[in-house]
Image (cartoon, rainbow, N blue to C red; front, side, top):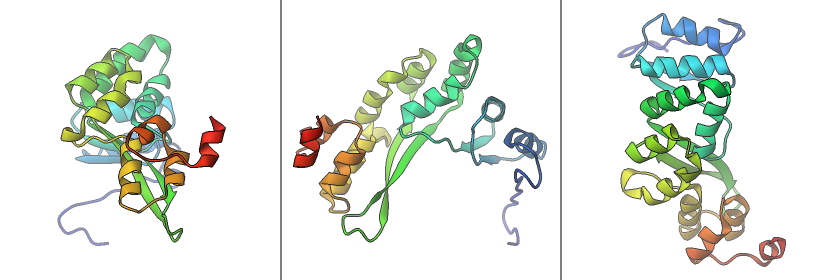
Length: 195
């Protein structure tokens, strides 16, 4: 693909570098504006991604988690206990958003639809990260719709109401069945027996 208005440089693990961290170091030497880290699995890669964000780079990264709060916890937990407070502080100042997603079957069974949890890091969320109160993040997400936030359960409810997914699917994938019930969704009998 010929570059017209931008230049894209790729570092591929196994081809251009041995590790994600090594590829990220090499990419940062080229003074990029935006960095995409395919997977942030280890301490060195996550540490370098945070450092890159602190120096003004827009960094996108992927982690395997199923909620925004768990994403924040996963990033912090990879660090030794004695450095987690400083990482919380760094992360609260650099993290801008977390989008967690899962694919679920459509109501007609012919495809899949992405269900997304969206957390933007406002002053309240940044404070929760800094103060190690990530268990309170879901409440901030639920109440942050004016800032573009939505919980996974809120999106599941919207998809059911739009006829895109089944109620059964929503109850299978929800974080809190009570949230779905409060929104007026009726729990399928098979799920009520599990509780």
